[in-house]
Each structure stands twice: as C-alpha cells, then as structure tokens.
Length: 276
Image 1: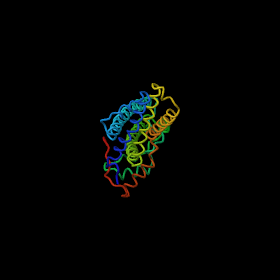
Image 2: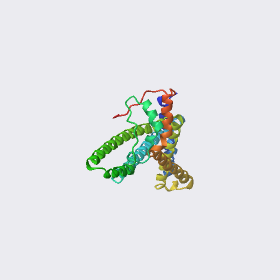
Image 3: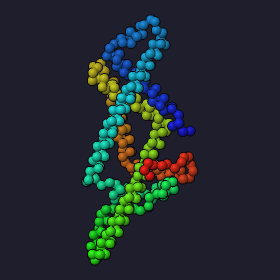
C-alpha cells in the first residue's frame, strides 16, 4: 500500500501542532498567571466547551509556529545552499565531471540506466583525467606540424564529446539521486518521525526564545530538554544536507531501485526528466 496516496502524514503533522501550541499557552500562563483560570471561571461555558477552546487555540497557535519556523529554516537552508554553490562556481573549482571520480561512471549503474530510459542514453564513454589528457596532448609536439594540428584537433573533439556525455550522465544521476531521497521520505515511519520531531523542534526553539523574555522559564527542566531538541535539529539538518550534497550516498540505493524496476519488482512507468 502506497501511504503517499493518503493524507495521513499531513493529518499527523497538523495534529502534532498541538504540542508547540500547548507549550505556547503554558508560557503564556507562566508569564501571566491565572490567564486560563479566568477562562475556566466563566460559568456560562461548559467544561467541554472550555477544553475544546483551549485545544483549538493550541492547534491554531502551534501550526502557526511550525509554519513560521519552516519558512525561516527554508530561507536559511536556501541561503547556505546558494553560498555553497557560489563558492563551487568560482573558476578555481573543478566540477566533478571534469575528471575526478564520480558515481555516474559506475558501469553497472550506467547499464541499468540504459535499460531504464525510454530516450536514447548518452554514449558510454569514460572521461579521461585532465592531467592524463594534457600529458598525451603534450606528446603530440614530437609530430610534424601538419600531423600535430590534425592530431590535436581530433583529441579536442573527442575530449569535447566525452565531456558532453559525462555531463549528460551526471544529469541523469542527479535526477535519480533526488528521486531516491524523495522516495525515502515517503515511507510511513518517515512521515511519523517528521511530523513529531518537527513540532518538537519548534517547541524547543519557542521555549528557548521565551526564556530570554520570561524569567520564570529560565529553569533547567525547561532549558535542558529544549537544548537537546535544538541539538537534534542541527544534527538532523546536517545529516540531510550531507545526504543531498554527497552524491555517492545514493549510489547503492539507485542500483537497487533500477534493478527492481528492470526485474519487474517495482511498478511504475519510466521517469522523464525536464530537458532530456
């Protein structure tokens, strides 16, 4: 059963928003005692109505906090990602397809992708390391001028074709790299874990921010658990970023996925990629 077809994960995420919402109401009560005491003192409201009002307020406030926190975290990750890409785009940076080892040069992976694609696959050429290519090019100096010119032209043309093919293979690898990561995030346990942990992390950040303004919140039983969840957030973010940035992290998973598709164990049509 494909759990991604059901809104269970969204429901869990929103329901878990009660956690930071109740925490926000608790901070309000600590900062201004008897806030809820006046609410429950209202005689014309029944007990269930009062409880429902508190839960509804917690639901609205909690989901507002998670959305706000999600936007801030997304902006931070976007800025950091753009900065890293800008550094890599400098002239001194040598792209992975320019000669150093790359996962999209794995022979088994290429063979599986060839069987998977509906469109013609790139030529199965291997890009020669730049140092070796420059050395072979320098050896052409011993040839006569006319023969040297012809030989250098042929070498440059072959190098250009090899780089284009290598770049096309890298684009397909990035496509399946993103697909595998997204596929892993569609499992039921991933939905449950993210729905709960994200709200707990939001709660922890709210507690730490509140402790800076509400003296009554400056106790170890508030601050210590909050610091633990913030540390978990940092480690989780670094782990997710490393998985995405390290292209080798999904090579085995891609081979397994493509093997299952080719053997008929996985159901689905051939993926298409924009621009391919």
